[in-house]
Amino acid sequence: MNKIKSLIYLSLFSLAIIWSCSSEDEKENIDEQTLNKAEIIEIGKLHNQYLSSTFSNFNWNSRDKFAEAQNRLMQIDIPEINMETQQRAVNFSFTNENSQRTASDEIDLESVKSGLNSELAISLVDSAYNNLNAFEHHSDFANSLLEIKSEIESNLTGTDFEVAYSYVIVLEQSSLFWKPIELGGSGEGYQILINSQNNGTASRGVSPCTKAVVAADGAAAATAFLGAGVAGWIAGAVNPAAMAASVAIAAAGASTYAGLTHPDCDDDDKKESN
Image 1 (cartoon, rainbow, N blue to C red):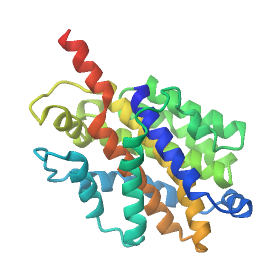
Image 2: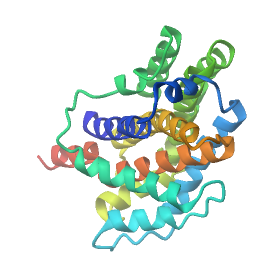
Image 3: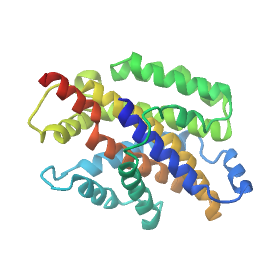
Image 4: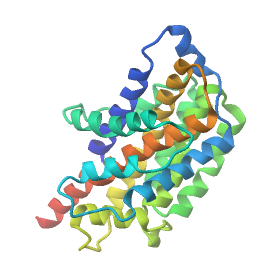
């Protein structure tokens, strides 16, 4: 699980750094809140929508599944952003993650928390992550997030609100997408993980793999949010709908990569074969 989180956390956090190569004044502007509750909730919905589109009629017999996934991500019609922005997000999700395979496995949730300013925001993100590990069924997990979301809505503002709320919202939506039906999920992402691992021939549970990908999704959204925010301010025109779409496609790209690699599932196979 640490392997897959390390790849996603490091690569998406690097995006925030790459996109923030401007003046300190420009960086400070991201402390101003750009998206509200409804717009961040939309990120979670778009994330799942983009994932579903990516893997719909996916060619699992392709010799290069990464190229197949990239092409599928670029075929998604996202009117809120231009093709250049979409291409940059998709390319980043794959190119940087492939190049970071030698990164330290110690990089984890700290990558998200390092972008937060208050102890409360850090505590709430920690709580959401801990609940992911504590509650396996989606409905139990979703219910456990209600109080956390309420705390964020009532007590956080600016970047802390956006990063923490996007983290929790995407965790929740990702759990719904990736978990099997018997665990309250849609079953769609579960089948994707099976197809990726076994060309669709197996039917065993992939709960450890699912949990790893869900955790990676939340971190991807949070750190991509920081990167998209900086990019918007540099461009001189922050459009909430465009920012939401940018974060969603970046997180979906990272999620796609995770779904195609999921080393936890590989580790499970090795254990079962021993």
